Image (tube, rainbow over the protein chains, first blue to last red):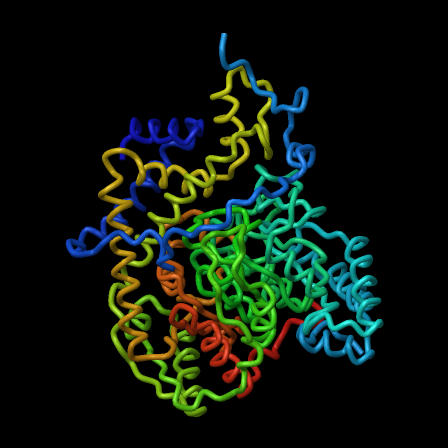
Length: 93
Length: 487
């Protein structure tokens, strides 16, 4: 992994990496990824990807209207609100 | 009589028999926590007023003759990532420091319905990402057996609170060993149920295909009693299944003929000599109780940790994308546009280890690397599950160490993340395969630190592993040795 890849990944992750952390982080990530290379030795040609171990498929429930949680209560954790809506910086000019 | 060293079942029985009241037990827990938690730092949020009100309510119902179940009136705690109304759930993070859950987790709801008195939250590694409870924004928790050591993690607060006799039991969560490893390091019993047995609704997500809520307690019987209450299908969590119940009633001490497999790979290089000796002694004890113990080769063992970290980080990067600084959680000041609001809130709100795992997860899911890392790990996961399936065709349970060492010193693992990840070798494969497993104290190392053994069962073999651990505890006294006195 090089610094450009790390910056690209950070952008995708919506994280702003402080310059002084980059070198250490790169070294640690590289060390971990090198270790993950171990998996290359496993013959997986005949294995199917296992998404979840329980093997559940198509879990349905009755399509019945249920009361939702109270709007005020759900919004109580937001730092900035305006007229009952979340407030964010301007997104369109 | 002082009940702080009693089990949860003993406390509840004493309440039913009129020997003590629930408010008295809550007062005793409060006194004990005030006495010792300044040096342990297991608890992150406490609400004694609410707990006392609740205890009085439960006591009144018991006094009226109402049957509220086997743990009614018992004080307990829940991990800082399990939601309960009225109690801030910070998940050990600056990101959620002021988060007040708008609803109760299903496990909390069920415990309260059964008369449990939840007094507060216990400390944890930030977002459950760690094995030491040092990455918490609340500060590190200390091991009651030696304050210079970590309690393990990530449910280190729950383990330390039980070990220090602050409370008889607590809920934790286990994604790769986060209940079992701290239980082992603190000399208590920790149980990770089969994936899907306990609802994850209200558990702040880390890696959803691996996360599972479970109990930490003094013994397997308490774990079974809590499991009986919290398990079951839940409309709020589509991955839950109808699961076995009556775990407590299945504890009959009988393990005659139980087939116990001991994987040779789990005793290879890298395992501490004292841990090896104690776990092999555990095998002998089980043999003495009538179990058939046999060594075998499990296979795939060295691939579990790399597969686990690829999958757990991938799911974490997706799950933690919900923290945008807007709906809840930490919000950076004065960002000029929406993207910098999100990036700054996330960068300032998450700690180092969480950011590292989000980056790793984003990398293994990114275009060009997805097949080589993520899909490859999913295929390896399938092979790991097959290896366990083959083992459980021959054995009822698998015996292993809980961790390669006993508890490490505070500050010893943070600088080398890979080394910390490798410590999870005996626990992560259980989550990948969705199996139930229990860890329990089986002796001490040369420095007097607790050693934990692990029993793993096939999917839905929850009763079997609890029964085997309980049988061991009926024959031994390691689980009775607590740090109940002065610290």
